[in-house]
Image (cartoon, rainbow, N blue to C red):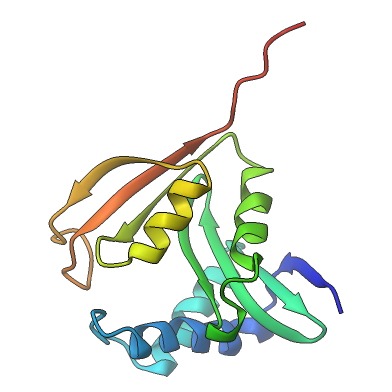
Length: 151
């Protein structure tokens, strides 16, 4: 079966909320601040705002990217879907519709840092964590599309 990217539907809130909540629950350095129901509700809000693209194989949602304009608010994959190029596919789709993207990722999330650097993002700032709910130091990254030279 092939991977399809599509806009999220309201019925996807439970699945992507579970992916988001599982990340917090299964990541040792991540404080678990929200219940599974709160994660689902939050994902429902992002879906209602039109921010979310899901990666689906067959009828199974494997991951999602939420974007508010040029800001990537979330990019999460189900644990069994990691390392298969699905995050790259979601990110490439976002790059294809924007000349500039930016995001924050936690300093402790070395895997995300490697991923974004490999995908052409550059570090633009660091924070001590005072600006996020988790209170964790984080890093801002930005990506700029290559400028096309006029012929």
